[in-house]
Length: 392
Ligand code: PLP
Image (cartoon, helix red, strand yellow):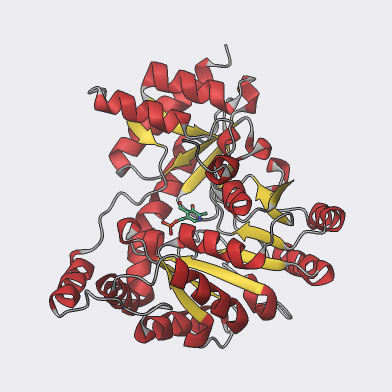
């Protein structure tokens, strides 16, 4: 029996970039003490009061079909949050609730990109981005953002790529995974200009919007002329440590929401009511709660910058936001992959090679700040010593 080709086409047949993570998991399962800095998941658990809200909601009967677009109070809360944070008046009709940011990325491309059309993204990128574009039958064109430019996208290169390919969509992510870069106002204004000139939909992945250490997060939807062509993805995974609840949202113009609604009828058929009510409770805790969830990553970012400073083998190249630090190890002459493999074998420290995220972060390492501070300090100190030894 043969399978359809769709999924194989989506994933491609090369390595998927997660090899170090899988190897680390095998070592952990075999009882080895691996310090794991690979995974972008908050190490704290969902707060008990959010779980209590979830429990109470389920016990009160929110266990049936809950509607396709998401419950109205949650959409109203999301709309109010987006309005307050961006200054763009947003109504519940412009919001649809999704089972996490990843499902939002998938759904957005399904409704904005036709088969054979080009979807642009930035290299380096979150590893699922190309597959998500291919899942819609789209052709992927990843436009480099150079380490030397702090991983800020190059608007001229974006305009050229859009023109040459006749692209329909552009997917960006700030604060950025894997680089920790926060796109500046100047970068975002130039991106907006390209989108307007080339008639692109902008898909703005803002799942790290509560994790900003330097500068200000700007949603490109707030820039002039952009609300009608921007689709924003949000998620409670990182902001509220709710990865397992699988809950996020899309904010978009109403015709896009109508298409997403039609897609949901044929896919998710909506989300569990008790998860949505827990998300509503979580969002109602307000910015102070979000700051509390984000704080350990800020502290650990400072810790990483301190421990990795003044090292001739390794340089922290960007870390303005999100729960990652990117380190440039090109001085060692090694690829990120070779370095990460050797580090795991010799020091039992797992982190992601930059190559997992695209060619522009080759020769780099992505360090996820998801270990407790004392463990993180041990891992980073050993990493710094190991890097020095690679200089010979
Ligand atoms: N977008 C980016 C940039 C991410 O890093 C992640 C998860 O790590 C996601 C989207 C998906 O997150 P979730 O589906 O848990 O909301």
